[in-house]
Length: 199
Image (cartoon, rainbow, N blue to C red; front, side):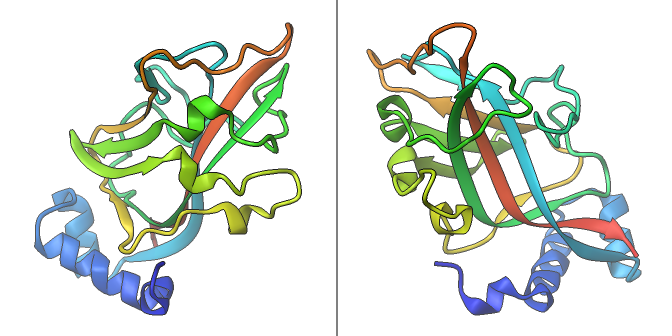
């Protein structure tokens, strides 16, 4: 579980300063942090994708051609803009079926294909998190999102200006359900935490 110390923005500010000193963010953001012109703002960053019938390998959720679009993705392409880094304290994976990706209810129990898969995020080819779907088995219409979250021991960090990846690694011989047309099956991966913004 995330310690109470890491849940407060003062500790996260200290972490951000440490990352700047270690050169893990762009020089521009590092300079702004040192100048005290950056603050952390609560955020939820997510990507939603159609996974109907897919399986037996890697499913790329975030594509280079992806535009930021409400109900689909908060990411604009695969690269966070310079000056916007993400510090996440929790990860949530949800599944739902419907006709429209933007308004689908993500309240279904995670299908077996997702329970046995690994949900992976990478930044600049370095692994940010690798979580098995079974960590989210409490998901369901009667479970509040905050009770479904996976809270890592340490915050996850997505630096600005770096290529960001989200994918699902599905075991061989396993596939996601294929809902009756015109419905489709959608997965959403969301990071809850903070993003850097100018003061």
